[in-house]
Image 1 (cartoon, rainbow, N blue to C red):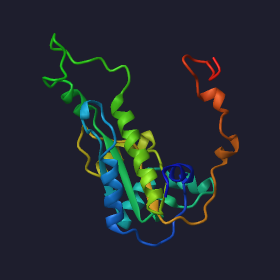
Image 2 (cartoon, rainbow, N blue to C red):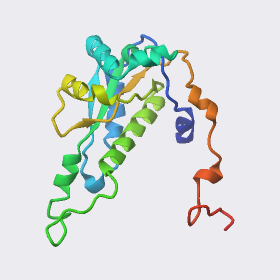
Image 3 (tube, rainbow, N blue to C red):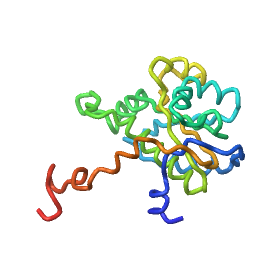
Length: 204
């Protein structure tokens, strides 16, 4: 599949068949995700792969699957053959930028105007989503509500400095209910693509 086709075909699919996903496919997807960029080559991203039905069910509960079902969607988290939980570690970035080749001359760490550990995690997530499509599969993304966040971390025995950014269900697509948010349509390109400065056009 050509890259533009992979990008255009990608969407959040919220219903999966019961067909299993070959573990080697997940391995290939994650091997690609490991090539995501990271500030200072910190490589602060990590992943938890979950296939146990009981664990998937508990994750689905903590990720608010009941609310999705109430809204008319399928039980797409618990039914997916595989769940990937992408994680990041802010502490890993601070450690990296205190190493000799990154620390400032005065011994201080750089200022972080943007939490790049989340930006890098987002890059990893996008690679997983695109790689799933390239493998003929489908995927979705679900966040973790704040009230359930600590229970979620405890369930997966995550270290204290490792933060899960969400859950990626992966499987073979089944007919699903499109998100009503899609009715908003895509924003005009002139509103999101600017040249030279904010508001600048290609003709400027």
